Image (cartoon, rainbow, N blue to C red):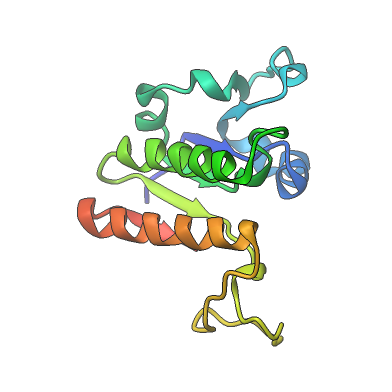
Length: 159
């Protein structure tokens, strides 16, 4: 069984990311956390390294065993138009998947907001996708992008 040493976590300062950072999981692995907010950049610990998301390199992507992508792309540029948000979000995701190497794993956290316009509960993986707003539209496009790349370069993906 392979032991995973390094996890690249995009979205670590968001709603779910904040809870993850409190978990025991964070004491067991080496984490690289690209962030937008400068206040985190000086909070490195023995097993957590924060870097400016703009400075994320190909080598950092390739040296990570697992990539957890839960970046809320709607908030990447607070004052930009929705078209720029959309472009920037897909660009980060494209950068990640294009620089992955064989044997890496990606965990992509989407949103229940991409399923069914009628809010049917429980939501199932086979539920129909429905883009009700810009946020869900971006998440659906991200899912498609990851699935397409996973088929091309044969990497493991967990939704």
